[in-house]
Length: 233
Image (tube, rainbow, N blue to C red; front, side, top):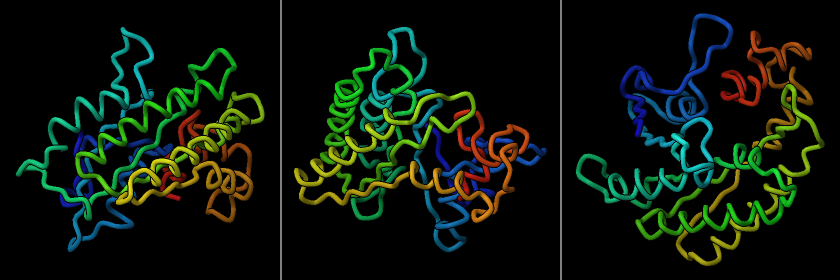
């Protein structure tokens, strides 16, 4: 796994970063949260980040070398940091478990049976959330899917992504009801990204289509990924 520590030049060198069209590299959203907005010289935030590009809830194929969320939780976190060793102490009250998944899963849904597909994936995802709860996790933050249909070269009206978000909210509510000590939250990247794209100037971006979508500007989406300035917002 990768560790990000605000005590060492803001982040470890292996922090995922993106070019914003200049030679300067900037943190992703994890970096912004743990350094600029919540971290400080007197308040260090340690982040254990298991996320990898292209990940899905379950492995997309037996030959895949991408670590899926199932493996991230069951194989990488729970047997190690999940046991609260001396070198990685954490408690229920000082830890937040964040999950942002689904973009790549939806890309693999070819049948059009979105409701069934989404529920199959979220059934698995929330089984793993229960494993985290049983290991001592109590604070959970889930991030829904952004408006992928507004990315460059994307098509459709975004209905499948909104359906994922609706069903995700249902699962979060059910999880909270079944786990009395859990604090659950949902952050809507769909709403946030939509507001930025609808009024970029209000969020500090140049108000032009080129600025929103061009890789060199890195203002809005970087292909299907948010670029550094949008990650900060």
